[in-house]
Image (cartoon, rainbow, N blue to C red):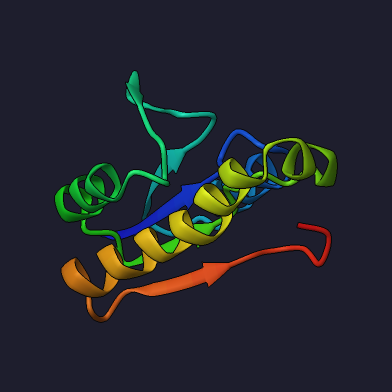
Length: 114
């Protein structure tokens, strides 16, 4: 079975991506990570060990990465957190995918505003 992990799954775009994946009619296991939770476990993509463990356990075939500090005002108010999530979190995901799923795909969506 093909496994797709979606970060930011409970965000505006993430909800639409989950719905679109569910409607494909294909056998896809969807692993949604959003608003700091997956299966009741707190998730912070800025924490390399946490992301490495999840990706190592789940071994997704693809990750659609949507999680971010997306609002420009929020990034301006907490720039260290924005860098930790938007840059370091993305790097953590990419490194864990490379380490545990070297043939995996990473789809990264971003904005010019953040």
